[in-house]
Image 1: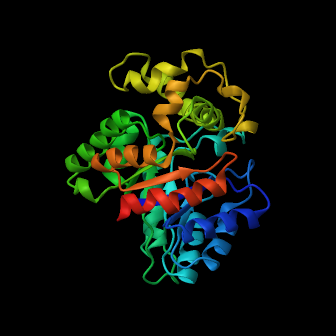
Image 2: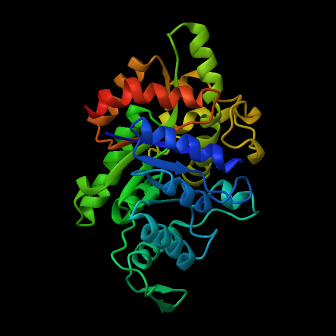
Image 3: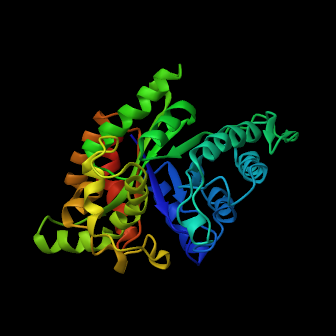
Length: 338
């Protein structure tokens, strides 16, 4: 199993770069960031410095979207980084939540997202693609490579990921939901004539390593990670609006917890102490996140690995960022990569 670190690009950028360097020293192989131009600093500028100051780390957004930048700009940006640093990028992409809504726009349709996946990959790897009805090719790209991994929850999105994406990003670490969604993605890949095992599976969720499993330690960890249930709840609310409650198309284990959700203020997005996440119960924090002593993390990750998960990406937005990276480096990553 591989490991990634997920950060927001809050200023100063030097702190983001320092944490990514620390992650590489501790055995992490991927460095991910949020991509929301209004809320945080521009990640692609920061990727250049991360790549300059690391040796092997692969970087990319978790996740970008088809509308913040034009597709040829996105492809050229990835290709430039790859040319400078040796194909060390990955494109995580989705419909767009915070990046679009904060700017007053709706997330993109799945049809638009599917088209963007093909075009961005083709352009970034030097092939011709059609952009807004015109053939485009970036002539200077040589031997470029850009895996495109898609974030998804709902049945149509999972099917699209299976048909088109090189990887699937699931932003929660619940084993039951992981098994359900990985099966949906791989079934769709097989139906499309692809090798289902060739789709990389990435689970991303907050991890908080405590010294013990005392009630006090776990309560603090839950409070530091409760924001994640609110973030996932934005996507769940979209699914409920589209498919309804108890539809059978989306598991109740994913949708039931948002019944008391009142709204969401993106100014607190992805941050510990988010006041809009009081509706998230402890049981959801425990299911969606990894909390407790290192041994508890290893146990959950072994379960996820057995379900076909290739990478666990640690959302590291809480008050123990350095300690979590170090604990994973000393006790968790060696146990899963041995």
